[in-house]
Length: 423
Ligand code: GCU
Image 1 (cartoon, rainbow, N blue to C red):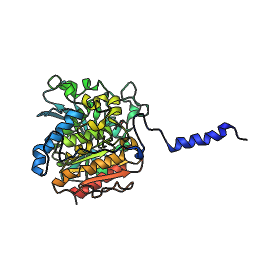
Image 2: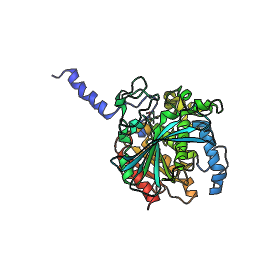
Image 3: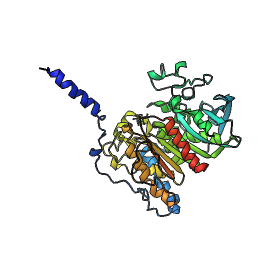
Image 4: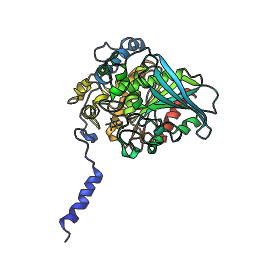
């Protein structure tokens, strides 16, 4: 006669395999998503309806931008910015001789106290004409993105991470290359693209008091640090990197894609929404506060994110925690701000926290604004099967696997850029 343990163990382990309980306050069961009605992107709250391109440019776009400033990301100071650029090093035989590696310090001319950000840029040696660029921030710094041992180690604050060999919030020699799977430099170089990156912590360390040691602190009191946010500071930095690229004769800055993974995907979207110089805007698994719909109760919620990462958003965003549908704007409207430029949204099958379906639906519901410009979006209202990229002016794929940015994701971004820029 088996004892109770023998009977219960298989049942318990089966329960563990079939259902990992969703984190408190979140839902990961499709059948439990309550009904919702999204705001009409062609009639943003507080504005009159939009029926033409002129309407969108004159009041639809400004009203939508203002909603995101007020309710999520704060007001990015407009500038103008006078940059002080310094080339720290140039290595012409990087990546087995395929690339030139440029390390450029970006500072503000009238703010010498701010140490600035260090931009790492690889350009393909095989191409003699100006090249298009993918631009993104990293979680750990240039030394973590690249495996080249002669890059300087970032001495800025780092989030604690044992697996990345962070000791006392600082990178160590062992931190080199720990993010390199997310930066397939050679893949881009082989296809004739440049890749520019910098450490997000150069702009603002990612913690609640980080603003004091970042650009928000440096610009205070000229700009009130509580007027904007950490995501705003990261997005601001992406635009300054583009300013720097615009000065380089070997870069085709008219063809710059801004891309970001996860929290840095939220920043990439906010940068791309505001700064119309970005010709292609790519969200990789950006989730809540990024590409995912907040009106759809699935995965991470505004209540959870604003508790865990209060510095990412303005305090107003936390007030929508109890009822996300009371927020007057949803994330399909953020995506619509990219119109008529190119947009790509990517999800991953196991990344339920970021709500893959909510990301797809946000892209789908951004389409009416693209349609004003005669641009077709995803071309289908149904979320595609895994590993089946779709879309015309708006691209989308659902990669098999976990929350990450992989060579598969990058390959789709390169294919999409090639299709539109180099047909
Ligand atoms: C957390 C956070 C997400 C974020 C992610 C990341 O999971 O809840 O909103 O996107 O970190 O940046 O990896």
